[in-house]
Length: 246
Image 1 (cartoon, rainbow, N blue to C red):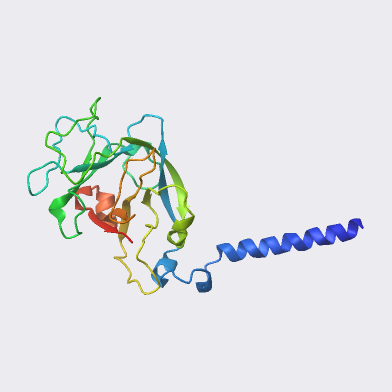
Image 2 (spheres, rainbow, N blue to C red):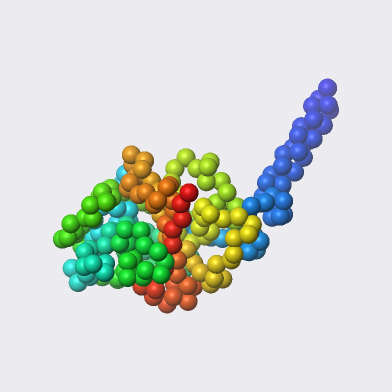
């Protein structure tokens, strides 16, 4: 009897190993909707930004802790852009080529198209952050409500090429830096983006009670991308914005 139970246990263990191997293999049939160019990129290192109630220097929404010498970016009509996120680089995991000092600020003028580069901005400064957030000095556009201040903490993760296909399983919005973006309009026929492009920041639609109240179109995603050369040279002002929705 003991031998029979042992044999059964070994068989079940072998089945489990096969199942896990199948789940994590990189065969085409495993990821039927993933473009070949994305499969070729393999698993990438990245960062997940988790919402937290613990106050810190990295956050989404609210008002930015801009140093006094740093101007709030303005759109083509002269009004201050919408503040989206503040990422304090010392909060980010080491070994991913992020700056070890300074802060990244992300702004946009409503939801622009990628070519409308005067309607979004990434500001990087190594100056000390202001002790208190700086409120807007121009009225918020009538079509927008203030984004709620939401603190975030960073965790280093590995991002698989098929992670975007599992968005329906997410129970929380997904905020990323580096790794694969969670594209919405993507299938096996989607053309490849520039090979040297880096995901600087992904902002999900998030109307959870503990979130910033982002909404990009119909439950969309908004991304800031940057070339690898500009990323390494800290030319964050050259970042581009894209977004997709359903």
